[in-house]
Amino acid sequence: MADNTANSGFMNNPVVKWIEYRLPVFSTLDHMVGSQYPTPKNLSYWWNFGSLAGLCLVIQILTGIVLVMHYTPHTTLAFDSVEHIMRDVNYGWLLRYMHANGASMFFIVVYIHIFRGLYYGSYKSPREILWFLGLIIFLLMMATAFMGYVLPWGQMSFWGATVITNLFSAFPIVGEPIVTWLWGGFAVDNPTLNRFFSLHYLLPFVIVGIVILHVLALHQHGSNNPMGIDTKGPQDRIPFHPYYTIKDAFGVGVFLIFFALVLFYFPNVLGHPDNYVPANPLVTPAHIVPEWYFLPFYAILRSVPDKLGGVLLMFGAILILFLLPWLDTSKVRSAKFRPIYKQLFWVFVLVCALLTWAGGKPAEGYYLIVARFCTAYYFLHLLVLMPLVGWFEKPLKLPSSISEPVLASDKA
View 1 (cartoon, one colour):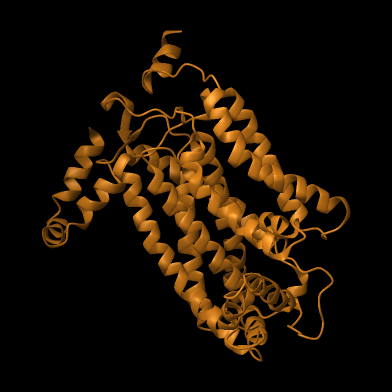
View 2: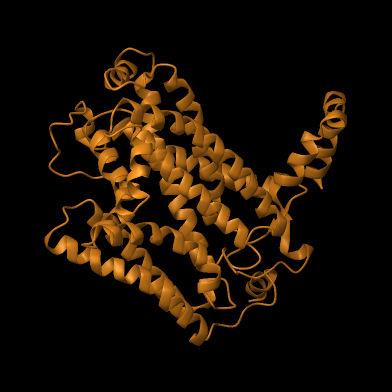
């Protein structure tokens, strides 16, 4: 009641009323993330990662805009311009480390967000399009990050671009023309850098557009919740503001502390030392690896001896996630009520972690054996185990409403 009164007082402000009459921005915000937006009353801190992903996107765009003012997208000047940013621009080192490590933070947050969705069944009806839009954002993030990794024009930038773009040559007939188009010629050179720079600057704003659609899809049916059941009435809902804005603010504080620790004490822990050496087409690094957030898919790529097969499996590992609403045949959303699926979920998380580890190691010996085993399980889990468990698993009894467990504990 006090919050509604305060909100009413704000809306009665003459300036606010003048703007609202001509552009209903305040009422729209209140409807989308304010006291007029009802949310399930049992959302946990795992639901903070959506807002944290939005914060990461804002950090990347703002730092990127400033960095572009000092960066020169030319093969003979790019590396030196990055050194200029680090050494001569006021707080340039901070901006560059924020941007580089901000990409890693963005992926950490998004990976947790995706695994949370897998655990609580957030991809199930009626939220399929919400899930699809999230995966499209993930794909755009990967494209943006890959192109950004090329821009410093260090050794790993050059050879990473050469190896990854060459993968498209595995496709018959269309492969070679695609590689030539990506390179802007017949080798990774200045046209390639210019294309990647242009797209790296553009794609974050495309991501912003998809994020808006993602939020609109979220508001259509509301947030999922740890119980995985629909809200039954006002007793199951609370306003987003102030209850979840306070919770999100706490999550932002914890995230910024973690980000600051990495930024000021371990700024290069997630990077590669070879990228501090200028690109040299005549010297191949001993071990070419992408950034850590690509390593699971890089491990899948290298686990197959055939180049085309590896490329298809690598892309398939992401595209298969679009089929989850139909591959998961269970009528119960949350893994809290699915004892078998819950155990398999944690096995799947472990397999993804092992793929990340194997992707950063040489493709030989037991590293390759681990990568092949984990690749096989990755597809087995999604294509076979999820449908079978959904058919044969006996889930636990669902509560009749979100409020029922709370009331039961109060009675106890």
